[in-house]
Image (spheres, rainbow, N blue to C red):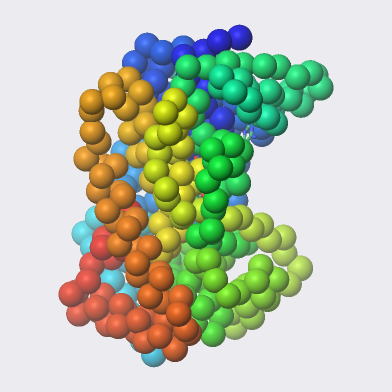
Length: 343
Ligand SMILES: Cc1cc2nc3c(=O)[nH]c(=O)nc-3n(C[C@H](O)[C@H](O)[C@H](O)COP(=O)(O)OP(=O)(O)OC[C@H]3O[C@@H](n4cnc5c(N)ncnc54)[C@H](O)[C@@H]3O)c2cc1C
Protein backbone atom coordinates (compact mmCIF):
# COMPACT_ATOMS: atom_id res chain seq x y z
CA UNK A 1 0.00 0.00 0.00
CA UNK A 2 1.35 3.47 -0.89
CA UNK A 3 1.04 6.63 1.23
CA UNK A 4 2.27 10.18 0.67
CA UNK A 5 3.92 9.95 4.08
CA UNK A 6 4.65 7.11 6.48
CA UNK A 7 5.82 7.95 10.00
CA UNK A 8 7.52 5.25 12.03
CA UNK A 9 6.77 5.89 15.70
CA UNK A 10 3.66 7.20 17.43
CA UNK A 11 5.38 9.25 20.14
CA UNK A 12 4.78 13.01 20.47
CA UNK A 13 7.05 13.75 17.47
CA UNK A 14 5.37 11.26 15.14
CA UNK A 15 1.83 12.22 16.14
CA UNK A 16 2.47 15.98 15.83
CA UNK A 17 3.93 15.38 12.38
CA UNK A 18 1.03 13.12 11.34
CA UNK A 19 -1.58 15.67 12.41
CA UNK A 20 0.06 18.48 10.42
CA UNK A 21 0.59 16.32 7.31
CA UNK A 22 -2.96 14.99 7.31
CA UNK A 23 -4.31 18.53 7.85
CA UNK A 24 -2.26 19.51 4.80
CA UNK A 25 -4.10 16.91 2.72
CA UNK A 26 -1.45 14.15 2.48
CA UNK A 27 -2.32 10.47 2.89
CA UNK A 28 -0.51 9.73 6.14
CA UNK A 29 0.18 6.54 8.08
CA UNK A 30 1.73 6.21 11.55
CA UNK A 31 3.19 2.78 12.34
CA UNK A 32 3.61 2.18 16.10
CA UNK A 33 4.91 -1.00 17.66
CA UNK A 34 3.11 -0.61 20.99
CA UNK A 35 -0.56 -1.63 21.33
CA UNK A 36 -1.45 2.07 21.52
CA UNK A 37 0.52 5.33 21.19
CA UNK A 38 1.57 6.95 24.47
CA UNK A 39 3.32 4.78 27.06
CA UNK A 40 6.98 5.77 27.43
CA UNK A 41 9.47 5.84 30.28
CA UNK A 42 9.45 9.53 31.20
CA UNK A 43 9.18 11.91 34.15
CA UNK A 44 6.39 13.73 32.31
CA UNK A 45 7.70 17.27 32.88
CA UNK A 46 6.62 19.98 30.45
CA UNK A 47 7.47 23.67 30.50
CA UNK A 48 5.31 26.79 30.39
CA UNK A 49 6.78 28.37 27.27
CA UNK A 50 7.07 24.94 25.63
CA UNK A 51 3.83 23.06 26.11
CA UNK A 52 1.79 23.94 29.21
CA UNK A 53 -0.13 26.73 27.54
CA UNK A 54 -0.65 24.70 24.34
CA UNK A 55 -2.39 21.61 25.70
CA UNK A 56 -5.78 21.25 27.40
CA UNK A 57 -5.73 21.90 31.15
CA UNK A 58 -7.34 18.51 31.72
CA UNK A 59 -4.04 16.85 30.73
CA UNK A 60 -2.08 18.64 33.45
CA UNK A 61 -1.61 16.53 36.58
CA UNK A 62 0.23 19.08 38.75
CA UNK A 63 1.79 22.46 37.97
CA UNK A 64 4.56 24.27 39.82
CA UNK A 65 5.25 28.04 39.84
CA UNK A 66 8.06 27.19 42.31
CA UNK A 67 11.10 24.99 41.75
CA UNK A 68 13.42 23.84 44.52
CA UNK A 69 16.99 23.46 43.36
CA UNK A 70 19.71 21.81 45.43
CA UNK A 71 23.42 21.68 44.73
CA UNK A 72 26.06 20.41 47.14
CA UNK A 73 26.50 23.91 48.65
CA UNK A 74 23.23 25.72 47.94
CA UNK A 75 19.47 25.28 48.31
CA UNK A 76 17.30 27.75 46.47
CA UNK A 77 13.65 28.24 45.58
CA UNK A 78 12.77 30.06 42.41
CA UNK A 79 9.29 31.39 41.76
CA UNK A 80 7.45 32.76 38.74
CA UNK A 81 3.90 34.11 38.41
CA UNK A 82 3.03 31.31 35.92
CA UNK A 83 3.86 27.61 36.34
CA UNK A 84 7.48 26.88 35.42
CA UNK A 85 6.92 23.16 34.94
CA UNK A 86 3.86 20.92 35.00
CA UNK A 87 3.55 17.15 34.91
CA UNK A 88 1.55 15.08 32.45
CA UNK A 89 0.79 11.39 32.13
CA UNK A 90 2.38 10.13 28.89
CA UNK A 91 -0.47 7.67 28.22
CA UNK A 92 -3.00 10.52 28.43
CA UNK A 93 -0.85 12.83 26.30
CA UNK A 94 -0.39 10.08 23.71
CA UNK A 95 -4.14 9.38 23.64
CA UNK A 96 -4.90 13.07 23.15
CA UNK A 97 -2.34 13.47 20.36
CA UNK A 98 -3.45 10.25 18.62
CA UNK A 99 -7.05 11.52 18.62
CA UNK A 100 -5.92 14.77 17.00
CA UNK A 101 -4.03 12.84 14.31
CA UNK A 102 -7.02 10.59 13.59
CA UNK A 103 -9.39 13.60 13.49
CA UNK A 104 -7.07 15.24 10.97
CA UNK A 105 -7.39 12.14 8.75
CA UNK A 106 -4.16 10.24 9.53
CA UNK A 107 -4.21 6.44 9.89
CA UNK A 108 -2.53 4.81 12.86
CA UNK A 109 -1.41 1.20 12.67
CA UNK A 110 -0.58 0.16 16.26
CA UNK A 111 0.94 -3.12 17.48
CA UNK A 112 3.03 -3.16 14.31
CA UNK A 113 6.84 -2.97 14.19
CA UNK A 114 8.77 -1.84 11.16
CA UNK A 115 11.61 -4.34 10.93
CA UNK A 116 13.34 -3.42 7.68
CA UNK A 117 13.60 -0.53 5.28
CA UNK A 118 14.64 -1.21 1.70
CA UNK A 119 15.27 1.07 -1.27
CA UNK A 120 12.40 3.15 -2.63
CA UNK A 121 11.11 3.87 0.90
CA UNK A 122 9.71 0.34 1.25
CA UNK A 123 8.88 -0.55 4.84
CA UNK A 124 8.53 -4.14 5.96
CA UNK A 125 6.37 -4.26 9.03
CA UNK A 126 5.32 -7.08 11.37
CA UNK A 127 1.79 -7.13 12.75
CA UNK A 128 1.98 -8.45 16.31
CA UNK A 129 -1.64 -9.65 16.47
CA UNK A 130 -1.74 -11.62 13.21
CA UNK A 131 1.96 -12.49 12.83
CA UNK A 132 1.71 -11.25 9.23
CA UNK A 133 4.28 -9.12 7.41
CA UNK A 134 2.99 -6.03 5.59
CA UNK A 135 4.85 -3.82 3.14
CA UNK A 136 4.18 -0.11 2.83
CA UNK A 137 5.75 2.34 0.40
CA UNK A 138 5.75 6.11 0.71
CA UNK A 139 6.91 9.29 -0.98
CA UNK A 140 8.21 10.75 2.32
CA UNK A 141 9.48 8.58 5.15
CA UNK A 142 9.61 10.11 8.64
CA UNK A 143 11.65 8.49 11.39
CA UNK A 144 9.99 9.41 14.69
CA UNK A 145 11.06 6.14 16.21
CA UNK A 146 12.94 7.38 19.24
CA UNK A 147 16.52 7.16 20.43
CA UNK A 148 17.26 3.73 18.90
CA UNK A 149 15.77 4.78 15.56
CA UNK A 150 15.78 2.23 12.74
CA UNK A 151 15.42 5.06 10.21
CA UNK A 152 18.48 6.82 11.63
CA UNK A 153 20.49 3.59 11.34
CA UNK A 154 19.19 3.11 7.78
CA UNK A 155 20.60 6.57 6.99
CA UNK A 156 23.96 5.47 8.43
CA UNK A 157 24.01 8.14 11.16
CA UNK A 158 25.82 7.27 14.39
CA UNK A 159 24.39 8.23 17.79
CA UNK A 160 27.42 8.93 19.94
CA UNK A 161 25.98 11.66 22.17
CA UNK A 162 23.46 9.51 24.00
CA UNK A 163 22.25 10.42 27.47
CA UNK A 164 20.50 8.08 29.88
CA UNK A 165 17.44 8.52 32.06
CA UNK A 166 16.16 6.32 34.85
CA UNK A 167 12.73 6.64 36.43
CA UNK A 168 10.84 5.25 39.42
CA UNK A 169 7.11 6.03 39.54
CA UNK A 170 6.14 5.73 43.20
CA UNK A 171 2.57 5.87 44.55
CA UNK A 172 1.87 8.70 46.98
CA UNK A 173 1.69 12.46 47.08
CA UNK A 174 4.63 14.84 47.33
CA UNK A 175 4.45 18.61 47.66
CA UNK A 176 7.40 20.11 45.79
CA UNK A 177 9.15 19.78 42.47
CA UNK A 178 12.87 19.34 43.13
CA UNK A 179 16.11 19.27 41.12
CA UNK A 180 19.31 17.91 42.65
CA UNK A 181 22.64 18.78 41.09
CA UNK A 182 24.98 16.56 43.06
CA UNK A 183 28.01 15.36 41.14
CA UNK A 184 28.67 12.57 43.71
CA UNK A 185 25.50 10.81 42.50
CA UNK A 186 24.76 12.25 39.08
CA UNK A 187 28.08 13.51 37.61
CA UNK A 188 27.10 16.36 35.25
CA UNK A 189 23.44 15.35 35.23
CA UNK A 190 20.82 15.73 37.95
CA UNK A 191 18.29 13.88 40.04
CA UNK A 192 14.63 14.90 40.12
CA UNK A 193 11.47 14.62 42.14
CA UNK A 194 8.46 15.43 39.95
CA UNK A 195 5.09 15.04 41.71
CA UNK A 196 2.19 13.78 39.59
CA UNK A 197 -1.47 13.39 40.58
CA UNK A 198 -1.24 10.40 42.92
CA UNK A 199 2.35 9.42 42.34
CA UNK A 200 5.81 10.91 42.21
CA UNK A 201 8.49 10.42 39.60
CA UNK A 202 11.98 10.03 41.05
CA UNK A 203 14.89 9.62 38.75
CA UNK A 204 18.01 10.96 37.16
CA UNK A 205 19.37 12.05 33.81
CA UNK A 206 23.01 12.02 32.83
CA UNK A 207 24.47 13.11 29.51
CA UNK A 208 26.73 10.69 27.61
CA UNK A 209 29.54 9.98 30.00
CA UNK A 210 31.12 8.12 32.72
CA UNK A 211 28.35 6.50 34.80
CA UNK A 212 27.13 3.03 33.86
CA UNK A 213 23.38 2.26 34.04
CA UNK A 214 23.98 -0.04 37.05
CA UNK A 215 25.97 2.64 38.88
CA UNK A 216 23.32 5.28 38.16
CA UNK A 217 20.59 2.99 39.50
CA UNK A 218 22.58 2.40 42.72
CA UNK A 219 23.22 6.14 43.05
CA UNK A 220 19.54 7.03 42.62
CA UNK A 221 18.63 4.53 45.37
CA UNK A 222 21.33 5.93 47.70
CA UNK A 223 20.25 9.52 47.01
CA UNK A 224 16.54 8.76 47.51
CA UNK A 225 16.88 6.80 50.80
CA UNK A 226 17.45 9.80 53.14
CA UNK A 227 14.48 11.51 51.46
CA UNK A 228 12.21 8.74 52.69
CA UNK A 229 12.05 6.66 49.50
CA UNK A 230 13.15 3.04 49.72
CA UNK A 231 13.59 2.22 46.05
CA UNK A 232 15.51 -1.04 46.42
CA UNK A 233 12.46 -3.25 45.84
CA UNK A 234 10.72 -0.88 43.43
CA UNK A 235 10.53 -1.29 39.67
CA UNK A 236 12.74 1.06 37.76
CA UNK A 237 12.64 1.87 34.06
CA UNK A 238 15.47 3.34 32.05
CA UNK A 239 15.75 4.83 28.59
CA UNK A 240 18.29 6.36 26.25
CA UNK A 241 18.03 10.01 25.28
CA UNK A 242 19.69 10.83 21.97
CA UNK A 243 21.09 14.34 21.58
CA UNK A 244 23.43 13.67 18.65
CA UNK A 245 21.75 16.08 16.23
CA UNK A 246 23.00 15.83 12.65
CA UNK A 247 20.03 17.22 10.73
CA UNK A 248 16.39 16.40 10.03
CA UNK A 249 16.19 16.28 6.24
CA UNK A 250 17.89 13.67 4.01
CA UNK A 251 16.28 13.80 0.52
CA UNK A 252 12.87 12.17 0.99
CA UNK A 253 13.67 10.83 4.47
CA UNK A 254 13.20 12.94 7.62
CA UNK A 255 14.01 12.54 11.31
CA UNK A 256 12.17 14.10 14.23
CA UNK A 257 12.48 14.18 18.01
CA UNK A 258 14.82 11.69 19.69
CA UNK A 259 15.45 9.97 16.33
CA UNK A 260 16.94 13.27 15.13
CA UNK A 261 18.91 13.68 18.39
CA UNK A 262 16.98 16.79 19.39
CA UNK A 263 16.42 16.19 23.10
CA UNK A 264 18.11 18.68 25.41
CA UNK A 265 21.71 17.62 26.09
CA UNK A 266 21.51 19.53 29.37
CA UNK A 267 18.29 18.21 30.93
CA UNK A 268 16.98 15.42 28.66
CA UNK A 269 13.83 17.47 27.93
CA UNK A 270 12.53 15.87 24.74
CA UNK A 271 8.74 16.15 24.47
CA UNK A 272 8.74 19.75 23.27
CA UNK A 273 11.63 19.25 20.78
CA UNK A 274 9.81 16.17 19.40
CA UNK A 275 6.59 18.11 18.82
CA UNK A 276 8.28 21.18 17.34
CA UNK A 277 10.46 19.11 15.01
CA UNK A 278 7.48 16.94 14.01
CA UNK A 279 5.54 20.04 13.03
CA UNK A 280 8.55 21.62 11.30
CA UNK A 281 9.23 18.49 9.22
CA UNK A 282 5.56 18.36 8.20
CA UNK A 283 5.68 22.04 7.19
CA UNK A 284 8.83 21.38 5.13
CA UNK A 285 7.21 18.42 3.32
CA UNK A 286 4.09 20.48 2.57
CA UNK A 287 6.05 23.55 1.51
CA UNK A 288 9.83 23.14 1.07
CA UNK A 289 10.33 26.94 1.02
CA UNK A 290 8.85 27.56 4.48
CA UNK A 291 11.13 27.94 7.48
CA UNK A 292 10.14 27.37 11.11
CA UNK A 293 11.28 30.03 13.62
CA UNK A 294 10.50 27.67 16.54
CA UNK A 295 12.71 25.01 14.99
CA UNK A 296 15.52 27.48 14.34
CA UNK A 297 15.41 28.62 17.97
CA UNK A 298 15.36 24.99 19.12
CA UNK A 299 18.48 24.18 17.11
CA UNK A 300 20.29 27.25 18.45
CA UNK A 301 19.48 26.19 22.03
CA UNK A 302 20.49 22.61 21.29
CA UNK A 303 23.91 23.77 20.04
CA UNK A 304 24.42 25.99 23.12
CA UNK A 305 23.46 23.16 25.51
CA UNK A 306 25.71 20.70 23.64
CA UNK A 307 28.66 23.06 24.26
CA UNK A 308 27.71 23.42 27.95
CA UNK A 309 27.54 19.64 28.38
CA UNK A 310 30.90 19.16 26.65
CA UNK A 311 32.36 21.64 29.15
CA UNK A 312 30.90 19.89 32.21
CA UNK A 313 31.81 16.40 30.94
CA UNK A 314 35.56 16.92 31.31
CA UNK A 315 35.79 16.20 35.05
CA UNK A 316 33.57 16.09 38.11
CA UNK A 317 35.32 18.96 39.90
CA UNK A 318 34.65 21.21 36.89
CA UNK A 319 31.05 19.97 36.73
CA UNK A 320 30.63 20.70 40.45
CA UNK A 321 31.98 24.24 40.09
CA UNK A 322 29.77 24.94 37.08
CA UNK A 323 26.72 23.55 38.92
CA UNK A 324 27.39 25.92 41.85
CA UNK A 325 27.88 28.85 39.45
CA UNK A 326 24.63 27.97 37.67
CA UNK A 327 22.64 27.74 40.92
CA UNK A 328 24.16 31.03 42.12
CA UNK A 329 23.15 32.55 38.77
CA UNK A 330 19.56 31.38 39.26
CA UNK A 331 19.51 32.66 42.84
CA UNK A 332 20.74 36.11 41.84
CA UNK A 333 18.42 36.08 38.79
CA UNK A 334 21.32 36.63 36.37
CA UNK A 335 20.10 33.34 34.94
CA UNK A 336 16.44 32.47 34.47
CA UNK A 337 15.08 28.93 34.62
CA UNK A 338 13.69 29.56 31.14
CA UNK A 339 17.29 29.87 29.88
CA UNK A 340 17.70 26.15 30.58
CA UNK A 341 14.61 25.09 28.62
CA UNK A 342 14.41 24.10 24.96
CA UNK A 343 11.64 26.57 24.02
C1 LIG B 1 13.74 8.44 32.27
C2 LIG B 1 13.34 9.50 31.27
C3 LIG B 1 12.69 10.63 31.72
C4 LIG B 1 12.32 11.65 30.81
N1 LIG B 1 11.66 12.74 31.29
C5 LIG B 1 11.29 13.72 30.44
C6 LIG B 1 10.56 14.85 30.90
O1 LIG B 1 10.22 14.98 32.09
N2 LIG B 1 10.22 15.81 29.99
C7 LIG B 1 10.55 15.71 28.68
O2 LIG B 1 10.24 16.65 27.90
N3 LIG B 1 11.23 14.65 28.21
C8 LIG B 1 11.58 13.64 29.04
N4 LIG B 1 12.24 12.55 28.57
C9 LIG B 1 12.55 12.47 27.13
C10 LIG B 1 11.29 12.14 26.33
O3 LIG B 1 10.65 11.00 26.86
C11 LIG B 1 11.64 11.91 24.87
O4 LIG B 1 12.58 12.87 24.44
C12 LIG B 1 10.40 12.01 23.98
O5 LIG B 1 9.49 10.97 24.29
C13 LIG B 1 10.80 11.90 22.51
O6 LIG B 1 9.66 11.81 21.71
P1 LIG B 1 9.73 11.09 20.28
O7 LIG B 1 8.38 11.20 19.70
O8 LIG B 1 10.90 11.61 19.54
O9 LIG B 1 10.09 9.57 20.60
P2 LIG B 1 9.38 8.51 21.55
O10 LIG B 1 8.50 9.16 22.54
O11 LIG B 1 10.49 7.64 22.05
O12 LIG B 1 8.48 7.70 20.55
C14 LIG B 1 9.02 6.82 19.61
C15 LIG B 1 7.96 5.78 19.28
O13 LIG B 1 8.43 4.98 18.19
C16 LIG B 1 8.03 3.64 18.42
N5 LIG B 1 8.94 2.80 17.63
C17 LIG B 1 10.28 2.69 17.75
N6 LIG B 1 10.78 1.84 16.83
C18 LIG B 1 9.72 1.42 16.09
C19 LIG B 1 9.59 0.53 14.98
N7 LIG B 1 10.66 -0.08 14.44
N8 LIG B 1 8.36 0.31 14.47
C20 LIG B 1 7.26 0.92 15.01
N9 LIG B 1 7.33 1.77 16.06
C21 LIG B 1 8.54 2.02 16.59
C22 LIG B 1 8.16 3.47 19.93
O14 LIG B 1 7.35 2.41 20.40
C23 LIG B 1 7.69 4.83 20.43
O15 LIG B 1 6.31 4.85 20.72
C24 LIG B 1 12.63 11.51 29.44
C25 LIG B 1 13.26 10.36 28.99
C26 LIG B 1 13.62 9.36 29.88
C27 LIG B 1 14.32 8.12 29.38
